[in-house]
Image 1 (tube, helix red, strand yellow):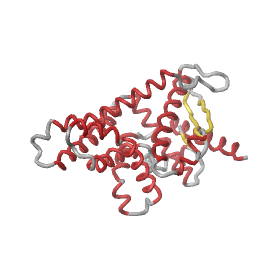
Image 2: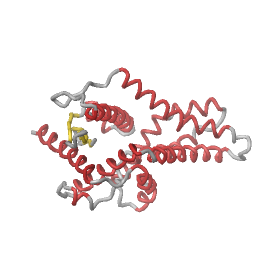
Image 3: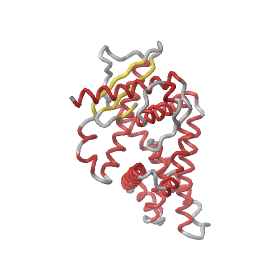
Image 4: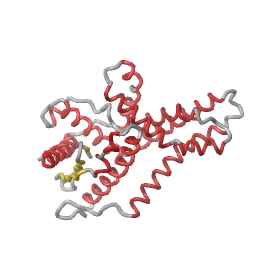
Length: 280
């Protein structure tokens, strides 16, 4: 899946080896004035990522099962899709936000200072994130997903560099990209360490509830940090601060094969064609 300024496109390799692709315009909610409002745009991007990602997964699964109609369409997201999305989000919040608090609570009696408790909580959160991604990457199906992820990055690099979109040209580019959504995950974990420090550690009920209440603020600030870094990549301090985001992509990307790069090319070309059509 590749997102353009006004269009998103998906390309999938069919079981017979051919490539299916489709594009759809982004709704006004994703391209309207809220997109330019600091902090609010971070929450909008989070919602967009979840909904577009779910639609892409639904469509790709339908292609694999040969359940796409002659127009390349599949059913819209239904109640069960939204329940799954909300459930998955809830599990993620429980594991990565509530889990470290409960684990650290056992150590509060032996830690001599509050800042040490907050540091342990934050490091546990980062460790859980890295361990989770590493563990997922051990599965063969997920490794293929990570290969497609790398193909997307390499293809976008070639596009940004003005290169022709073909496999030999794209092979010259790295599989890590500074504006990858993976950066958001690690940035959230690090920004949370700073934001949660202001909320304190006692009592336990407040420590737990404050983590949940502050999730929107953490997400919004994380997006602004990534956006700032994207505009100032030439600053040495920015490169140093965000080096971990690129390092994390060693886990979330793999070197793609030629066929996977071809799928990424198809998705990007579909975006370009759709945006040329809508701009006329």
